[in-house]
Length: 130
Ligand SMILES: [Fe+2]
Image (tube, rainbow, N blue to C red; front, side, top):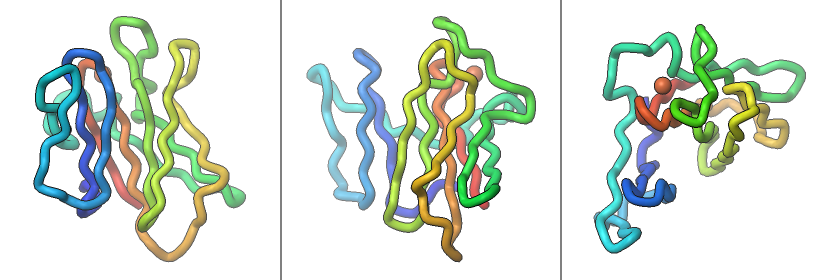
């Protein structure tokens, strides 16, 4: 489930990321072409390696990608993990030597729903909520 109003866009030429918090009914452009809006959980195969798992412990929010850890190679990797809570958004870019996990220590934990997003360079955008 994707948070209402939040949209991620990707440039298919350079890989640039753009996000909107409200729907302005415009499609951003990059490298001279329209960016592709990313839809979460479009593929049903490989969900066990892509759906982000949100875990709250000791005031920190940990997001791990997949029940089975996703590969992190140059050819196939999780590029970034994002977490939202209400109007707040945090994105962590992952390096090739990173595990497919992210810790969000500064994200306030309130009564609202947490939404996590992970982006695989091959299998696209995945999301979950808690
Ligand atoms: Fe993948």
